[in-house]
Image (cartoon, rainbow, N blue to C red; front, top):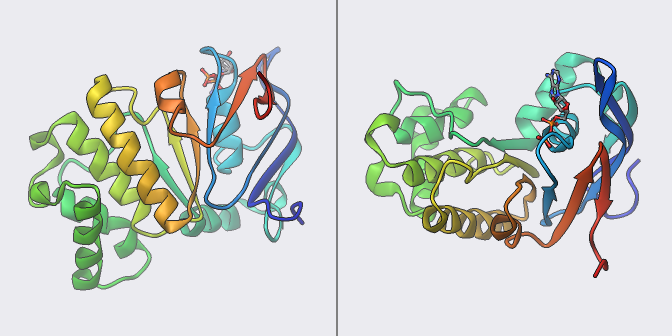
Length: 228
Ligand code: ADP
């Protein structure tokens, strides 16, 4: 079980690719509705930590637990099912499906969960509205701006109302004005739905939207709460 109140807890994570450890005993925890920024220099292990938390990468040792127990002990298929139902993802380059309209992209996770087309598209349109991009619903990703595309990607990550949202440099490809707008809408929407957000960034102005910062250095994570 996780410690009281925590949604996701990782302890003692080790992961090596070859001789150098990417994670060297990293600990991490997050509460419901909390926005935590994982910061640190390039190559310090931020993305590896995020991937272990999300169950995309198996750590060599250490545990990741959420509510019901140790996630890293589950078979692959069960971990994938948990990932689909509980987690949402936002990446640096939106990664929208180019052949689908923005509306169809946002409706896709619901369709994959078995929701009928009409209901899925109605919910998708509502989320596009919350992210202020309902005007591009009928357009394909190649026809919208970078900032609009990222807002569509955020809408897609939230449409299933996941408990945890993982965002890896979500504004890394945007200029600062668009980046700030996306972060504002993203964190507001996540807080509204009480989704926890694990945000990897190397930019202080992006981390400023978080409730708490965790700094990863040499594969170890250090909570900056209370650190001057
Ligand atoms: P960050 O996100 O902080 O830039 P990463 O977690 O991507 O750091 O990488 C940490 C270390 O692990 C780096 O030295 C990187 O080269 C290495 N690494 C990460 N993923 C892989 C991989 N799939 N194969 C080999 N080395 C990797």
